[in-house]
Length: 247
Image (cartoon, rainbow, N blue to C red; front, side, top):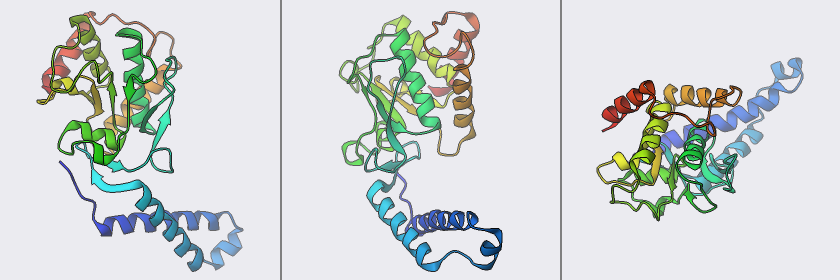
């Protein structure tokens, strides 16, 4: 559901950010001086002004379907940047940084290694808020919390684009992500190219899955690039259980 962010919330947010910057600069000064003086009012006002300008330039004030705020630009001091997908020919994908990036890059990487080799241009990330339909899961692209993998090969509204063994891999990836990622092929309006974060901002499950995936980088035999047996009974059971929950 589309949610408008109130003016009061926006102003409170920029004021908090600006105050944090100003207070942080005071902490860097000597303890005695910091105890005598609070944040400089002129500097604080300037920080607030800059934060308001940045928010006006970057933020939309509207949430995508999964509750994350859409952003109007990318690679320009917001939360959405072009991020690499190690081990692939992709220059990068435009996604929300931190936990969202970790999880979606993992999804793309497993697709590359286990379903079909991806080439530059095969993966679409962020899209402008005006280019997506707000009531559908595709709106999550505008908040940097979704990717489309080969949308030309798996057009919206069409089902059955993947072979059975390929869908087994998709189900295994979703189970590995413990439900924080949803496949557009399971939506009432099917979009088999779409994979998106299916929890709201601040949900601890996303942080936990991201920590797990990051940990695999230091664990031999784990993570994307390591072929797994998707028919292994325990993995199949986990995949079936999640598919039933997300149906």
